[in-house]
Image 1 (cartoon, helix red, strand yellow):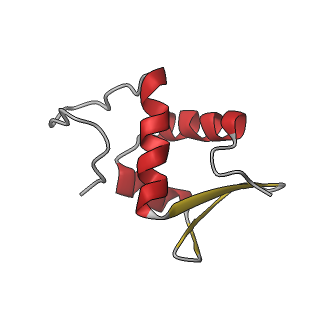
Image 2 (image 1 turned 135 degrees about the vertical axis):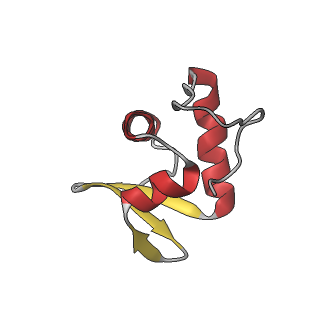
Image 3 (image 1 turned 45 degrees about the horizontal axis):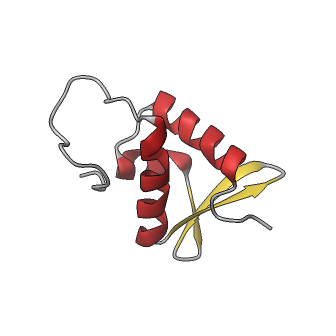
Length: 85
């Protein structure tokens, strides 16, 4: 079961597109859930509860396709949502 962050989530064969105005809502839901993404020299490091987690776990938990996850990473790198050190 994936995390709920958008309304009208129905069963579909293909991933629904995530529009530009929805990225902040997704990131806010991730933050509220306790997920943290830090930009490092090795890329984005995902943590939850102080533990490093694999990107595949983030994709599965939030119901993101590979393409959507790539766009999420680009959004995070551009906006530094979590305020990396």
